[in-house]
Amino acid sequence: MTVFLTIVVIALFGITLWQMSKILKLSQAKIDNSQVANDKDNNLQGKLMLAFVIFLYVLMIYCFTQYNSYFLPESASEHGVDYDRLMLISMVLIMIVQILTQGLLHFFSYKYRGKKENKALFFADNDKLEFIWTIIPVIVLAGLIIYGLFTWTDIMNIDEEDGDPLIVELYAYQFDWRARYSGEDNELGKANVRFIEGINTLGLDVSDTYGKDDKITNELHLPVNRKVIFKMRSQDVLHSAYMPFFRAQMNVVPGMITEFAYTPTVTSEEMRNSEFMVEKVATINKIRREKSKKLVAAGDEALEEYTFEYYLLCNKICGVSHYNMQMKIIVESEEDYKAWLKTQPTFGEQLSAQASN
Image (cartoon, rainbow, N blue to C red):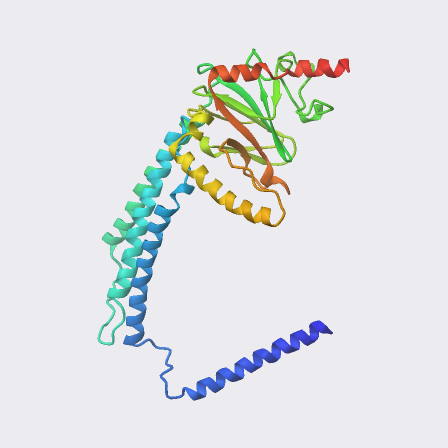
């Protein structure tokens, strides 16, 4: 009954507004309500078009100058330089086209606004003009696509025989990551989700001798200036290994192994002390301190000071806790990396410890 009365009241309100609009029209009978635009309308619309494009340019300049702190800093990987160059070229071309086309569109809307004494000039066709505005985008887009293909091919050229790459497996499951390092043989042991049992959370094949010296960790440590080849597996659903500072992303697909490789060039400490990151962290902590005052006043705990770290994130919506699926990445010197790796138990040692218990 309440719903029915609500609908009736809404309907009566609508009828009231309709009747009021009819009364308003009657009171404005002498006003020119013609649907045909006159010179006054055209002048107004032309000026509004100019005002809008000026506002658009001012807003664009403001966003680039005021929000550049939200841009990523320089790439922390070797291939990221090529990636960023391709991105910059694409953005510059887009901005040039956007500025020219928007400017001309709005300027011509003002310059050629309707006037009573003017008559439209009609062109049936113009082959030369059509050729020009077709061939220019074709050449530009073809150049971008070819350049992009060459860049992508260089990035995805994964050669395990090239130098001394580090082999690391990234294992994804709802809602966390694990890293598996190959042992001294630099070869990962066989694994299958059907073998998951007890401490064998990654499903390693216990009969495979190559897997006995593998090391499973919940932090990803990488040596600087050494190529890392990632082998990626998923236990359950589709995930995506996303490492923005290294310009790296690859889908992690159930039932198959996907690969990606890059060479870290900036350690965590170097990035943390960079001018860009020092300024950004200071801004974040300023905001957090202001928020902490409100939280403390409300009886809650204050936020901890933010410290920069590299992170591996999931970039696929994989479930309710997708937002919290992340793993810290620490890029350090080769010596520090080896020292840390020595402290990690091997899979064989974990099996022995379990058997002894």
